[in-house]
Image (cartoon, rainbow, N blue to C red; front, top):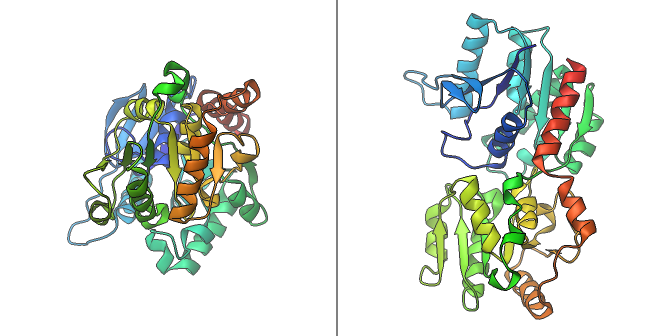
Length: 357
């Protein structure tokens, strides 16, 4: 049966490099022989062996958020094209549209975070101004979905009691391209990097302050784009630190392969791919508790430090790690990471979808 994967941004042509876009890319790459049509706002044509259909964002005379424009375009597509098949969705709002226009379709919802987090004080989502409405949308979407795949243990606990559908927790994953740590000698790995969207939820201003201090003793790099870019440039000491925009996955993999540390300063995360990508590349991760959504620290104690969201806490952890020296991943730790390779995680997801088809 045909499957329609729906997501606003195309990971190749939208100029974004977020976790959901990476997840979508990997779903497509490791789909086996699935017949998939990708509905998105950026590209029409063949890509990665699948058919892509562009949903126009233009709404003449009205200034609306892109997500709402896409929802309106998606509604028009569903109403006129009447596609027959199953739908794979990554936003709650789209569940309601698909159920309205295709009432008998199977819906597989991937939940990267929940309404409680998305409408909280540290969120950068516009839904934080209408929390009640979004929670109603979440409640309906959970009820209308055939399977809800949850990428965050905290979110799984939160929605399990709310969903009338089969709810499955899936592990975080990383693309095999990031397993480059062994290709760079330990003594050649140096410096610290922060990677993420330059938005409030990621707390990049704290990252800039940390990098300013660390830059006196090691190379530092901040990678990202977003509404706080100008503010970050003002805080960051450009003569010793530099800021770069997100590159390709290959470029990020190459950067992580040469870096010794990754710092994560997030107020909250859904399913942070960069956490596992850095570990797979042989980095040590220093992060806030909210960044380690799957409690990887319980299994990788030598390679993760959980600290409060304070500059001095990060600096102290880094100093202690520098004094300790690098400890290579053990076989047990390598096995733990191997089970989270997206090649195996995505194939398991597709198998579950096929069983329910």
